Every structure is written in C-alpha cells, then in structure tokens.
Length: 384
Ligand SMILES: [Zn+2]
Image (cartoon, rainbow, N blue to C red; front, top):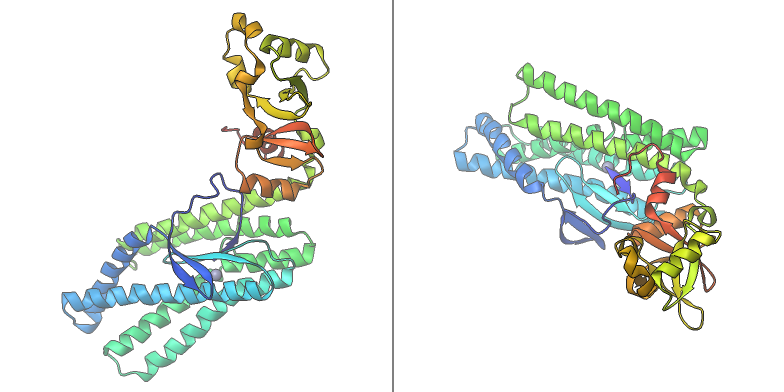
C-alpha cells in the first residue's frame, strides 16, 4: 500500500514506533503489530507443528520466523514504492510496517498518471519476484525440512502480498493503478481517485464477505477471523478517506481568501470594549473581527470573541480591548492571494482555529477554520 499526505486533524500524531532508517528512509512500526505478531505466531505454530511434527517450542519459533519473513517481505515491497518515487523526484517521508500491508508516505502526489502507475506497481512487482524465487527454492529443497518450510513461508507471504495489493481498489496498489488509468483517460485526477475509492469499498465488503464464508465453511481458523475483519475494516476506511480527499481536492480552487476571510475592524490599543463594539455595530463590518493596533497603527493583537463575550455588559465600558485580545504573532499568517493548495498546506503545517490574512503589512481579514471546512465539505456536519 502507499499513500500521500492527506489532511489530518493532528498532523504530528503518529501511532508508530520509529526503529531506524533504510536507504535514508525513516522506518516505523505500527503499535498494533505486537498483537498481530502474537496472533499470527500462534496460528502459524499450530499449522507448522501439524505439518512437520515438531515440539511446541519449535512450532512457535517457526511461527515467529513466519512473522519476520512476512515483515521483511512487506519492507522490500514498500522499498519498491519508496525508491521508485524518489527516482522520479517525489520525497519519501517514511515507511510504516503493518502485517498485511505497510505504507509509504510521500510528500506529494505523482505529477503524471505514468509516474503514479510506475510507483504503485513497483511494490507488487518486488513481491512477485520474491514470491517466484521462494517458490523455486521450495521446489528445490527436500520436503519436510526446516529450510523447505521457511522457503515455503516466504513464497506464501510474498504471493499473498503481491496478489492482495493488486486488487483494484484504493488504498491498495491496484487501486492506485486504477486511479492512474482513469486519470490518464479522463485527464481528471480526482475522478480517478473517486472511482478507485468506490471500487476500494467494494473490495472491502468483498473481503469481509469472503472471510465470513471461509470461516463458516471451516476453511479459515476462527482465530484468524478478527484479524481478517480488521483488514477489511482498514480497507473500508482507507477507501472512504480517498473518496473524501478527492471531493475536498476538487473544491480547492474555490478557496479565495479575499472572500472567505472575515473582515476586520482596527481599534487602537486602550479602546474600551464597549466602544469597540459600538464602532463595529455602526460601521460596515458588523460581523468583523476586532484587531488592536499600536500607537503607530500597526496591528498587534486580535480580540478573542469568546473572551470578549464573557465580559459582563456593565464592565465593558471600563475594560480595554487589550485585556481580551491575544497577540497576532502567535497566529499563522497567509497572504490574501494564496491559492487553495497552499492554503491547505499552511493549515496542515500550522493547525489552528484562526489565521491572519495579510496584504503586505496590513491585516485584511481573519480566516476561521470552520468557514474553510464549510466551503470544502458543505454536506459534512461541523464538529468544531
Ligand atoms: Zn504497495
């Protein structure tokens, strides 16, 4: 699997543990790995003991060896994506390993459908080559030996990783390939993402249905059921995120800070709050934000609407606006002409509720993140 950066509520939140670097790419391990490692080790140990007539301990060792080979295979698969992306000038932020699909985070989208396709196919190609080599080794090694068993493990894990990832729905690699194809045909990248996202939902439901069927017909150990359902759920969520991102991205050109930002009314420092309210009500910007200026007329602070409203009416004539304002230097700023894509980049790198919109030295407006969210996702219920 692979993914590019997407809007997040908490950009710094990473659930994984950073364990090192490979070819300069930071490597993270997902926290859920511990649980999955135990589960797969136990499941596989049962299977291997029956096949090889081993002791309990040897069974667990082989089970653990299977998990390690699965992780190694996923790492090589992700390196296929990462190194191909880097070859085409796309920066790689890191690789996160999960059991049935790690992901590679890139710092931007592929510039063309062709590069998107090459980057997405590189991972499954690596897995397929590893799978073929391991199948050859399995056939060459004598039956019933440990070496044969290990080669067989590698063959199975790589063939599974290659085939599973080629299913044509996002967030899987096959979904990304489908997106590239639709993008090439329609010349609309977002259309491609949306189509591949919907197919991804079908793949997720299909996976869940297949898992249920295999469990009912006793072709799958009941212990594997939660793991496989988790995979299906992860796919469903990833597909939904892709669809959402495509819709948001399509609306990015609508972002016009000169219209979206709320107007400001400048009041000198020391102005009583009641007087500031009166000027705003009388002026042309009744809903505007109050900006406090210093003696030289430079904007220095922004009145916090909640703090100002909390001041009792009878105290407002005696309280200066400065007392309920916060320094502008603490708020991220955006020039009024910034395009939609750059606005989103600023929001991602500096998450906050308000942004100062500037024109040269002047503050021309205040962008509320809720207004931006409303513009980008008008149908989504606000939760801020
Ligand atoms: Zn992949």
